[in-house]
Image 1 (cartoon, rainbow, N blue to C red):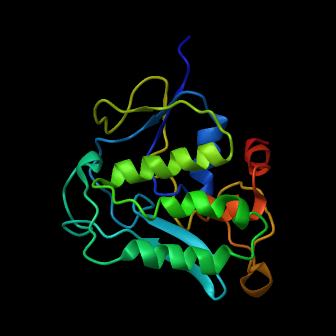
Image 2 (cartoon, rainbow, N blue to C red):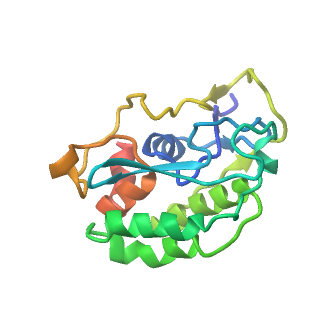
Length: 203
């Protein structure tokens, strides 16, 4: 019997539910031939700040309503969004338990200029895996299938911001002010939990 394939969208600093599915399954494919989906985590990162949720959006050439496939989406640098994003992350997490262990490497991702969004997203994922010492293989899709057949779990467009998932609780930086916020970017759990997040998400 062939092993089940899990098909995931290509997210920017993936949300925790995405990363949980990534860790729990072996045969991972990441979609690169779909048309870009606006208001998704493909170019958005949601973190927790002192006054509530903060969304960091990567600006795209042609805007968010373009009709290009994911692998061809280009990042816009008309504005210095990288400096703004990093300053926001630093402000939100500099008091977190594991910030000092991971900040330097994460910051480097905001000092590079990737032409394509997908290249940036994949490098962010690889960096998270490296910091957590996760050795995980995955492949990119070779073509787009609207409705994959056979032994495939299609998890594209599953990780919506307001959807509830079975995820572990942990202590967040501003939990005493705004309450616990579930399914944020994996950055939140990385800075707040560190390497033990792997076992938390696998259990």
